[in-house]
Length: 123
Image 1 (cartoon, rainbow, N blue to C red):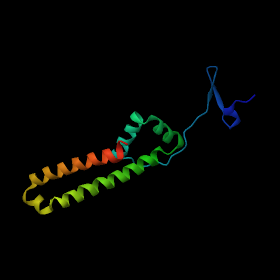
Image 2 (cartoon, one colour; image 1 turned 135 degrees about the horizontal axis):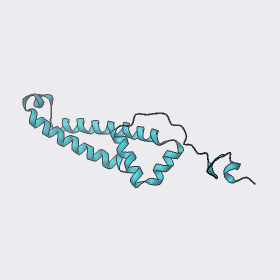
Image 3 (spheres, rainbow, N blue to C red; image 1 turned 45 degrees about the horizontal axis):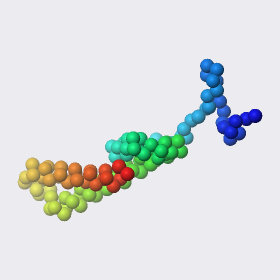
Image 4 (cartoon, rainbow, N blue to C red; image 1 turned 60 degrees about the vertical axis):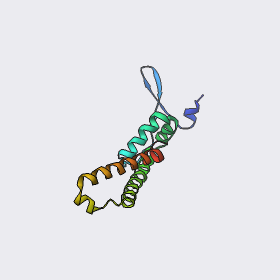
């Protein structure tokens, strides 16, 4: 009598007297995953284990992380540019008072990073 695994086309191989199922993950296209995608992957792995495993075993993890990476990057740059423009931080300020410009831009980047993390990465 065949097992359910064998009935759906599964096969086994023998190792040291045990039958081990031949399991492989589906092929996924290689995609560039940057810092945002890596943060999201780490979050999923630690806090949303079922979702992480479902994405991994269905072959959709890399495309999901690449999508998050792209959206997070776009959101981050949009927030930085809009906030800098709203606060009047210009190239003229950069040329006349570079340390002030750096301080203001660092504050804007940190705030934008927090927004992206809370709205896209750690969800």
